[in-house]
Amino acid sequence: MRRADLVFERPENLFARVPPEARGRDRDDVRLLVTLPDGHRDARFEDLPQFLRAGDLLVVNESAAIPASLSARGRLGTILLNLSTRFRSDLWIAEPRWSAGKPGPLPVEPGEDLRIGTATVRLLSQYPGIPRLWFVSSNRPLDGIVAERGQPIHYGYTDAWPMEVYRTLFSRVPGSAEMPSAARPITPRIRGLLEEAGVRIAPVLLHTGVSSLEIESETVEAQAMYPEPFSVSAETARAVNRAHASGGRVIAIGTTVVRALESAWTPAGVRPCVGFTRLFVHPDRGIHAVDGLLTGFHDPVTSHLALLTAFLGIDGVRSVYAAAVRSGYLWHEFGDSHLILTSHLGPAGPMDPT
Amino acid sequence: MAVPPRHPEKVALVTGASRGLGRVLARFLAEQGYGLLLTARGEVGLREVAEELRPFTSNVASIAGDVTDAGHRDRVLEAARAWRRIDVLVNNASELGPSPLPPLEAASRDDFVRVLEVNVLAPLALIREALPLLRISKGLVVNITSDAAIGGYPGWGLYGASKAALDLVSKTLAAELKDRGVSIVSVDPGDMRTKMHQDAYLGQDISDRPPPDVTLPFWAWLLSQPPKAVSGGRFQAQASLWEVPA
Image (cartoon, rainbow over all chains, first blue to last red; front, side, top):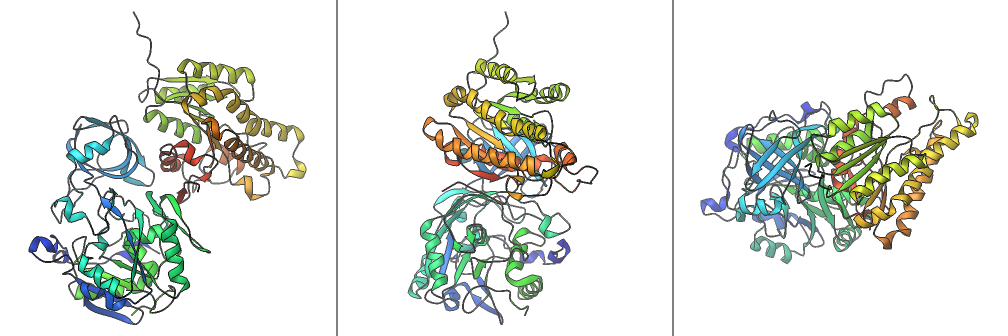
């Protein structure tokens, strides 16, 4: 697949800039675009249970966002260091930026030091194949510095909101640089409706790094990826395999869940797995472990958009995104939701473009 | 009066450190504040690497020599004993064998002996001799292996057989040393644009292979794991999944 295939236009007035609760509405008061094998339906998020049935399994990410954006002083003045992936408390992958709205790459050199509070953070080496990311080490554990001084990572189209805004009903283990946002509209009320409908919920853990990567290579498959810590428990692996064996569908709540479950997948099913993954889910690799995805709307030329093409094909994605723009669906973490079901019944297969 | 240099808090010993993967890994370790003991046969290259690392760590020692030479290994370990620990021992120095690669039926016994000495016997000897220091630090031994160990690729018989033997040495030692706090892994770095890879593909264009820094994300991961948790594992540095063995 070529990079150019993932280019599309969407007007800036479709960026969701504030969470619904900041306008006095409920989190579940967002729209839901449903992509089925035979076409699209416009719905409200509270309609989600109508598209599911008893025996379906929703898999959610238990990772909670941390305030990973740190103000740092150095040779270039005051910059932003967005922590992405934690190897140890003193060794991370991070993205130096001019500011929330102004990305890098910055003219920094290996060995350069930044001051963050009482810590000295050293830029070690650029991440191979992703020049905006650096390995950084610190003379003090960064976990405490993050807790004391960190802000939630945010970009030009929105402000930093209180951390509570970045937590979901399922957030349990802090560690994600950015909120796994697909579950944000699942309120206790929606969860109740899902349980009444006989839909079950199982957790995985994947600490997501900084924003979906913009693909820079000519062909999508050649893009370098960075690793993310994840784990799939024996219990969840069993629940996924049991759902499939009994004809139920496995629906990933977010692209992070797709990456975790596909990383733990073997032809014999999903197995318990703990480690770091940088699996790039694209059409050549295919989708094996899940039959559907609840997600948001993704930016052009990103790895998340490439992941959608693994479900829908490139023509399918282009068609559904054109429809979403026409119908005014809202983009980004505070925006509307998109449910993709690749089959009404049984396991996933490639879907015809509509 | 000169202040005696402070002992580094963590020490890494890297063989074959004068170029390629060894050089990149040595630098990454130095950047993280490890004291570095470097060895390789090429004295000039080794000195260059030591100079390159000095801005990152005040503790760099380089000792040129051949890892198959017991006297040389002893000199290297003497330096390690002065620092009183080895946290990471990377057996990276490897012998490809004759270039161009001969098919097994044409390979000489002498060549095979040399390949086995460098790739199997020397790493095992260095691990044995370093054990007291590795035990003090509850250290990690990293033996660099290759997909040739399982591939059966034509021409790669000597090298592949030696790496298969090294893999089994790693796995067996991991089991034998489990209760003594020393951990051992095998790491296949994958194809890289290095002198050894060029020697294996004489006269061919290998510019499509990535430079050895493609392995940095893996080293960041491996060196952040509790050594015990990964011991006995065999990892591919360029894979998309690094799994803690169950």
